[in-house]
Amino acid sequence: MVKLVVAYGHPEDPAAFDQHYAETHIPLAQKIPNVRRFEAGKVLGTADGSAAPYYFIAELWFDTVDDLQTSRQSPEGRAAGDDVGNFATGGATLMIAEA
Amino acid sequence: MVKLVVAYGHPEDPAAFDQHYAETHIPLAQKIPNVRRFEAGKVLGTADGSAAPYYFIAELWFDTVDDLQTSRQSPEGRAAGDDVGNFATGGATLMIAEA
Image (cartoon, rainbow over all chains, first blue to last red; front, side, top):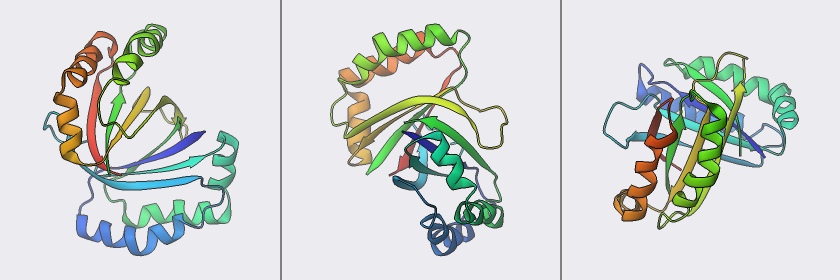
């Protein structure tokens, strides 16, 4: 399997990020086809107490890289991807990783 | 649940990293108590084709933050943690996140 790791930088307004993520982004993400598992949550800190480079991490598991790319390019995938720009004021790094 | 996300920067010698990880680090990590799930793999790239900030990501799931910290501080946890310095020539960022 592979996963899409979406690592969100610290937003300008965390409360607004949280609200948009829960009320708008999650419903869009849940429509993306071929997602085998979805997991998302806040970064609570780093192990050594230094500043965490990210505020929030979401992961979407797919069977293959081809599935992942096809799903990202589907209408539902594009809708979720386009929505990131609406709330990710701290940026978002999208990595594809072995899982 | 919570997870420990270990994000490894690009090592000086990827082949040496891979060999040490597989032959030495995985066996040490497998001895860490209270790990509910372990997942690790290479970062294959970013969604937009830009350079990925990490080479490899490992995740260890625990029931609670307390379990995570207790396990990290156990002899087995310390052995695995100390080993990171033996192969992570690109550094390692350890984040604790909601899961």
